[in-house]
Image 1: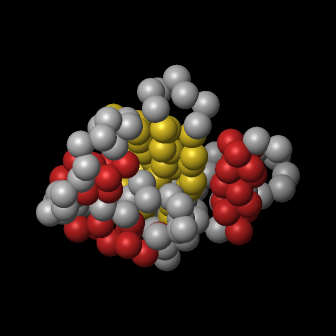
Image 2: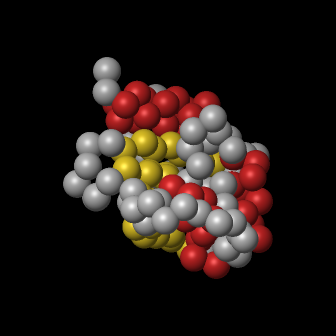
Length: 137
């Protein structure tokens, strides 16, 4: 089973556990059922065409589905869900060009989120986005 297949299965399990998937005929989901703050996050090592992609579903209220969910939700809350407004950390990253592309799709409050950015390294990505895209344990 590929990593993306496992990730999709895990996302489905999280949605089912959160009560977002139900058996029976398809119906429009009530806005009261959907969590207000959720993002599907991916990190691709190399260029955007790389097959080395990891992804997870981040749910907030309560934080679930992410190795650092509480920290990621706190970073997002402080920036009102705007990833580009997360304060950059003061860290020194080695000048090694090893790009990573991140993508976040979902909802924060009443807004849709669709954020994509390529950083020169994972260190720069973490410095600029906090725990949001730190998907590994």
